[in-house]
Length: 501
Ligand SMILES: *Cc1c(COP(=O)(O)O)cnc(C)c1O
Image (cartoon, rainbow, N blue to C red; front, side, top):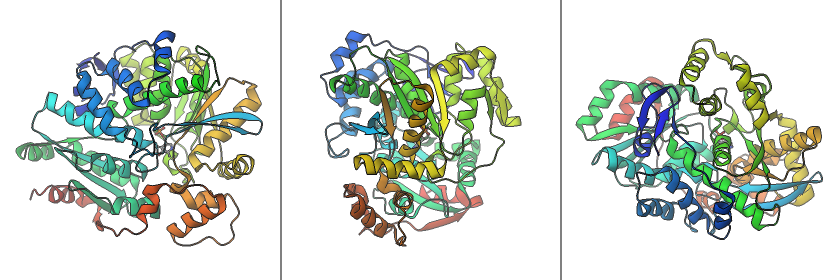
């Protein structure tokens, strides 16, 4: 299996190169040249095996430059019962909401309580093995700019992983108190956390500038190091996400929700388009899917795109209660466009240039039709997000977070307007305790506590659900990091964290 760049078909790399490098020099993203096929019989054989073995089966198809032992080592280290609160890291729960069946795929049982753990617990192992194959002996320096969830998940994944060092920047006033506390208390010898005086875009721009300046790469090379990336454009983050959609399909059969071979719908609360794209890749591999339902919050650039074929980021940006979906440029959409245009690298490169210069592009009519036949786009405002949390809790005593609520609300509308009753799997992307304040607000609580941990206690009392251990454990911990830097001194912060002066 080899990989191309979405913006240059002549660029061909192995999976180890794709993972070590993160992004292609031409600015394109690495994509597999073809999709390995699972027949219905292959899926049948996966019904009775564990999540970990399903993961190995999927990885084997894509990581053909890895040995079986290497793949097994990565999977076994990542998806332990200890790290994911049980043998199955991605359990499926069946509920009924407004007379519709919901099959909730809980992806937040990992160490940081968001679905990013599903990929970031395994990426460090894939990356260190990829580096051994392509740049042996070099230490990878992972630079991350985060608006909250990715930073903590990356820290937790990379902590004490040999030959890696991780440095995370977050906007001083742009993350929740819980997210800040999660990052600043991070354990591990190879981690560094720093706030910047600026917003998320400043952090992202700063990281990109450091990353792409050849002078910095030269300095690192002299010390036996190189920069690498843990954000969602890395193939090593997308691949592990395909697994849980294959696994969810198997579980739907095992739970007698469908017959083997029947189609399902897949509903995903979407930001950067990584999670829903992984579902689409599972479909390309043979998992029977009828429709992908792409759920957005008020930042509904994807809803408009799916409906009109015009991607237009020139619009107001809203800060919402589902902050991980507050995004106007969905990077992974580029991979879908490449695939649906039959690998037209010139078209993709043109569209991405238009996005950069004008902030807007329109896809050709053929592509528009293809997108519409596979995808449905919908969005949900803050009032409906809160109402759905409350209604679902009242109907089923099931507490969901704000992002999952967006997905459920959009799905509810989808069924009302289309009448499509195909059994649906809904990706649940975070624990409600990670967003306690907004979840509490859904229940008209008049006396909102000031402290984040008092909010957790209040939510516990109200819902009688379990507080995830990683959140309850944080309570007594004191911060290890309290660094703050100006946005134009991030480079010095990086070098001093690496012990280079
Ligand atoms: C990152 C994130 C999303 C968005 O996922 P994408 O892959 O970027 O589309 C949704 N919900 C939560 C809780 C997240 O952390």
